[in-house]
Image (cartoon, rainbow, N blue to C red; front, side, top):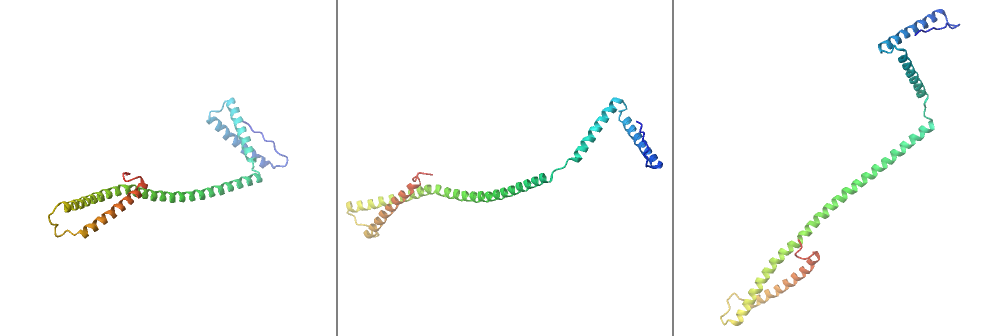
Length: 195
């Protein structure tokens, strides 16, 4: 490449020499760069120049691209609104998290209550079987005593007290009544056979 600079009418001769010297130095640097890159061919040189020209146009266009103030204000306002929406959603999510935690504690408490209730019929069944066996043995012993007292002519033992026996019989009848009432109440839980 050769650079021929025409001397401006108002420039001093020494300034012209400076410009020519700088242009020559830049041309030598560019020629050296082209040679080192293997682009000394004319077609490759033209392609490179076209790409450089296109790049310079794009850079110039990018430099003149500006965002209008009103557009920038709209974008900032939109970002602020989105930020407020996200903040409110975070607050709502935190409140929901607290409610879910309280609900989880309540469910756990109710679950423990249900476990205890589920064991109640089995416990009552065991108590009932024990009470029934005791009452049955007591009734059999009372029946045997009453039948033997009428059929046998032998004297009663000294420890036998008819008043106490009658008292025990009345207490047994009362216990049977209470047991029947308990069975009726337990039937609301599914019966005594429910585990």
